Image 1 (cartoon, rainbow, N blue to C red):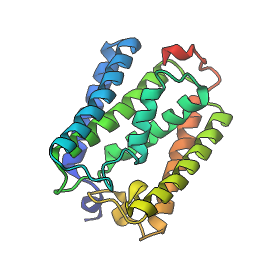
Image 2: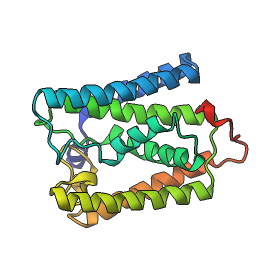
Image 3: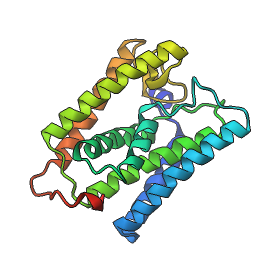
Image 4: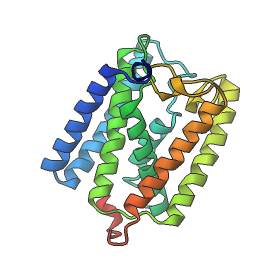
Length: 226
């Protein structure tokens, strides 16, 4: 009963398909090709999603701004094609890992979600997973300074999101109430405790990713490879 409460079989099936596609692409394609795929996937995803909402007169400022952590990260990933800063790239990698893992297991989609919202959700989180795969393959190394910078940066963004939520009466980053859909928050305590747990999960993901990528045998390669 508990398992059914936190898992969505259809969502897990979609996640399995995306993971399989990710590994197939990584096995057969070089990193430079994967980078091009990622770049245009992000561009098309943003254009198709927003144009569809506006054409259908469905855009809602309280729900559709790219302010959730994963969607902000997707835009940040696009910027890493032009901003070759190690702290910034490390921040995007750490966010990507957390976002991809959470989205592959959980979903904030429900029966009321539009098809374009479902498309946007899966493509965005696939892009996050692909970015991590690209950076992992070039043996990008994250050090303690990069980790601390990323944590502080997310805290600054979170503070800004709280202000935006107050102004718009919105729920970006799920700071006021739990996300809809089938996800782990269903078994977590009510506000504010569920949000504290989400922060803890994020920190654990950050630390595990840091431990994975801090290996001294990994090389800091040319930033242009990322």
